[in-house]
Amino acid sequence: MQQTYRFVRTPELASASLTVTSHGPLVTVWPHGFRSPRALFLSLLFFFWLNVIRPIESGAQGNLYSLYFPPVPSPAQARTVESFLRKWLVADPAPMAATVAVTTRCQYRCGHCSAAGVDDRPELDADALRRVVAECLDLGVHVVTFTGGEPLLRDDLEELIAAVPPELATTLVFTNAHGLDAARARALRRAGLFGVHVSLDSPDPATHDRLRGCEGAFARVERGVHAALDAGLKVGLSTYATHASVEAGDLARLAALAHHWGVHEVTVFDAIPTGRLLHDDQVPLTPADHLTVVRQARRATRRARRRPRVVSQSWTNRRGGCARYIGCLGAGFQVHVTAQGDVTPCDFTPLSFGNVADEPLATIWRRMTTHPEYRRHSVACRMQDPEFRALYIDTIPAGASLPHPIAELDRAAAGDAAATHSSG
Image (tube, rainbow, N blue to C red; front, side, top):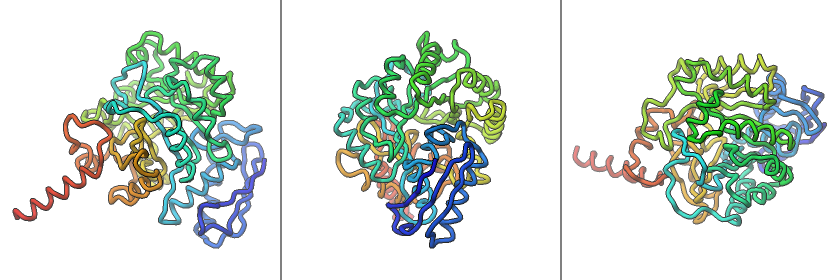
């Protein structure tokens, strides 16, 4: 397969293009018209990295390296490369990914839910959500992920998926799989869905059911995984690491189960104090935990011969190597829109920069990326940074609905600083 990548949203790259060709698992790239040596170097580095990690699978759609990237080569992946270059070349970053919550409803009540605490304002209707998706694409997003709550509870989810042109972005759904049977999986695929991430808290069925508060939840995950694969969807398992699960070595068993099921990817999020755990300071992993998760993920990927590929948030938080150039994804690589229209840096951060019902997403994105906290690069997750939490999380008023307007916290902090100055 061969595609020519052009960078139509970036004037600094107007003369540049890349000819990208997949030869089985390997990718070659020929640059043309690059005036910036740095842009040329970063472009070649990007594809060198892909050849190092190798694809999960190769096929007629191109090479799949992760559910979080469009296949290579493809028109949507050209937007990936452009957003990557914009982040490091121009002072006008563009999000690569958007997570769009389509509902707060859910069949389960998980103790670790990051979406808990959202107020009961009306959810955006289908027309508003389609407009949000269109504005995300205008910003340069190349992966649109529908989340919740449980997104499969929306009967019009397929309409929202179909609103995303595949040449611009791939679409994903994060689901608990409670309603993911064969018929729904086929309907999602017909609508154009690229893949699903299915939540699995534990490789032990009884433990998963207990954490989800629903007997049979594990069986529904297994059913949903096979239904999605049979429908032609890419499938990932989404889990999270706690200190206890790291010590127990749960990741190795979960990755083995994913391999047995034929899953493409396993994502290991860090347990983050947010949602129902917002003020639980015992949640964060230790540095030793992070290192262990990174090592366990690498071993599991090698053992499975890259299917599944096991990716971890702990890797992006390790503050070293090339990971330090990725760091915190919020407001750099990602933007999140809640079911009520609030715009936050990511789905773990309960801070609102505005609402899409009141102003365009592009206006809110610019406000977010020029905010003193978010205009700087953070080498690790802000929501796990004690200094950030002291400024922006611990100061959220008790009982406040989430996400909380960051402007109110900034005004309160400015008032406190002025009062301290005058008293001094």
